[in-house]
Image (cartoon, rainbow over all chains, first blue to last red; front, side, top):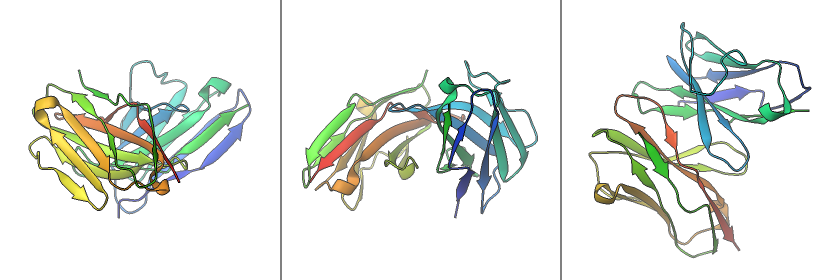
Length: 115
Length: 114
């Protein structure tokens, strides 16, 4: 149980275009989902927390107009990187929260390369 | 403020050696949770263990063991008789209080040589 998928697993896009990444909880409902970014050889940094049906809460320093998060249902959250630039190239990982506050189930990640 | 420190950036061992990965945490919360995750080259995080602040019992799972000491705010991870498949980045993480935000350490890259 507690399987989280991400799509796509990797994507290459041109500078200036937008990219959407999907995060799905496959066998449970997730009121809360989290989005992390990981640059090469660095740790995971929380970008934002999204709650189903409400606006996402962004961490300090994360541009909410650039990283659009939508959590439209209890099983799906999307992250859209708008007007992507090479510096947005990174590994994006989502997680879905379980019933307890300490539970998070991670997706396999999406590797974004912006050329 | 909450913080997780993994002072070892990289560790290299030879297969069958034992290796300990250090983790020191900071939190003012009395209730908190500590985690270890493994991140192999594929990138997918693999959950290894969760410990709550009220349970200081050490845990052993096969070749893995964890030593939780509140007195030193440490949650160290030992791999016994390491194998090449253990090569990965290992992250220690913390959730404190009523928050659901995971705070990750900087990770330790473990390379197990055959």
